[in-house]
Image 1: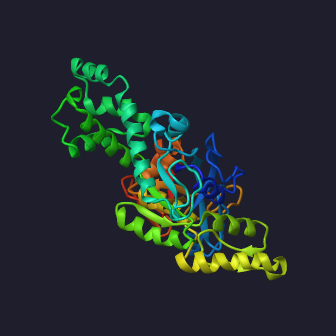
Image 2: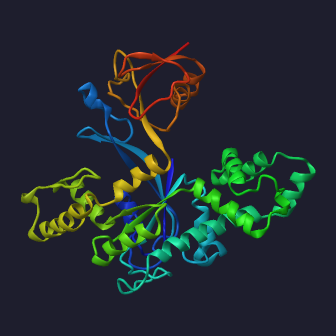
Length: 397
């Protein structure tokens, strides 16, 4: 799974990315500090099932703290996009192409209104962040449309002449954007294009088709960064009123980065996503204490979190509708090395026991006989739909 971090230059994208991954990336107060996409590992946070077994897990990937399991996901921080990106402005075409593999997007905007459309610093409150949401929607829609239109007339004629299956052919053509046959079939129906042959689609119909596919294949969470400023808090309310179909999360990426770095250096105790932290007064000077108290008062007490961890969780569990499932054994939860519940997989909601077996290993899927629900201690069939936090043992031939 890949989550793309997008937005204009200079709005805090790289700070968000670094706070989520603690990767070593450049953070600078000027446009285009990021040119090449950065890749790193973030984590979604879930209640670990180990507490139900009165044990402590030992993850092979990710980690677990106080029975909160952190499951890795890949993040890519794409260079800042500006209006006209789909036409190549600001190297926009190259930056957009970096988003092809992304399953979902996190759009970081400057909620304080202190960054203009070009990514330049301006007086806070002088720019309307609503424009950022509209601009990115347009750029992504036009990017999808541009990909569709490349050689479209010839492509459409060939489909007609060869009597090709429209759904299968279009899905194959756009598969690099994570478009599936199901997407195409639903899109044709919902845009009233099922009765029209593709070569007869007009510009408006093609744009509508492209926009629908973009929303389905690149669902987006909006991060209202710099919410610790007064104008930022006000704009969060405005954004939520304007864009009711989006998940809009107040965020202070600077605060999250400060907390994670402080926890890394053991001057505070902090679990990402928590609404408070514990200071080690003996390791902090007065200035550091003051800064941390500001984060507690103006961010955590106000919004209950910094927004960074919440954004990752919302993207994976709400937008993409995934659940977490553990392989385990009826008689023991350890692997051959003694690691307790070492693996936890993110799976699409609705995953069956057989599909989970194939996710663990192809040979396990091919050899599937039955599965066991380890928590309920009952057998389940291959078509049984697994639920959030299930622990499953697969029996094979």
